[in-house]
Image 1 (cartoon, rainbow, N blue to C red):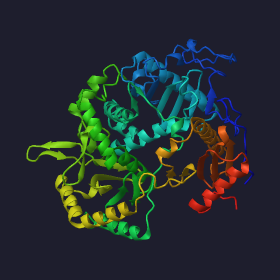
Image 2: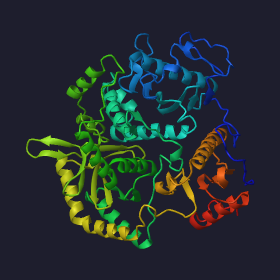
Image 3: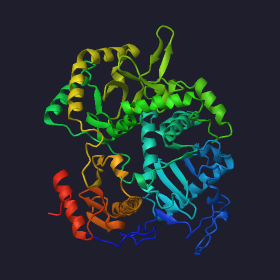
Length: 571
């Protein structure tokens, strides 16, 4: 590996690039080439410093006309190709009260950009478009089904938003949606009118976005989140003795249905202790658990419900993506019935797994994710069916909680013949046979738990990422907040450059990882560092450090040798 690179302090956004800029067609600056979406002809490049985009007709200048400065849309390129049927391609649009013409304007522009980018790079998806006033972040969730996040630039966010972090939001909400409702394309094939898909997208994505609510606006990840990595699992380090106890618990959980093997996840606080699922499925279920099911999340749910009862609600209003959107949803609620395993969730029209006020822990320790009403039993907690793409199986999710430990038990849907009675049998088996194991594991984990600062390393603010295993570990959020704004901004810009370099390397040679290291001296003798070695990544900020590159390099070596088994050492 070559020697580390050092640069002068970063004083403004217009600092010299620390890595080669991405020049592939997935990054197109609209001030260099503008495509007419109305006439289909390309206009010549306008190299003026402040290009006027008002001539588009479907222009970017109105992209935030609803007042929020942010829009999220989901659309299907296979739909609405006939004249007069353009509305049919819109599956979801936020904000829901955005005028129809503006929705068509935004999605028409996005479709034109996607088509234009494919001319130059048919094998690579368009990822981001930067214009003078807006950033468009693209994600092709499924074949010809696109999700786009449109963010209005202003003096507060122009230098703080990182496109990969924004794209991570789109990836996360789609993965969670698929786990609960199946692929969007499957829903569209099952009901070509798209009422089913629109109904579920409307409630699910709106509930997901409620986590970003800040007053009347959505607060997206900023430079202050540069030591967080969405799309990764955070694991708890345990001793060999505790690992044996966890293994014993996992064995008991796996036998809750007799000869049929059940899968499970075990969490302590918001950290993963064990899993029997493949990595991708583990990530999706872990993400959902941390968002809504762990003790901390349930406490937040209760606070949210108390807040809602005071008169302020997080409302998933009917989308205006079609002229008869409200009627479509009502017809769906009244008529849609699907008895297939993958469609059981759709039978519960009001099933919203991300709606906080519907989640609660019962007296028996089991967490209810909504409920159904029975004439005989009254309100019965409902156990949803989840689709695990990597495991290729449908499974019921049963959640049990004891103090700081959360058990997510997954029961193969094909093996559960008696419905609610079968679920009740599994719950009874868990309480009778696994309770003592759960108590023992919880006690030992609590005894060895160092609290929220358990993974703090004095003098360092860091994040470790293993993309292949989808695992990360970082300094506690409370410690990260002690960094100065200049250090956080510098580290955020460094991460943005690393994202671009990784994307460029992936396109040029997807079979081999490239190792590189970047060290930047920021203000007040602070250093921000990024090191990528054999696919694993280390990001670090050091404040009140030395003036020389040797200081930064030595600090990385010490950290690597002591906490990473030498994974980032140069030897």
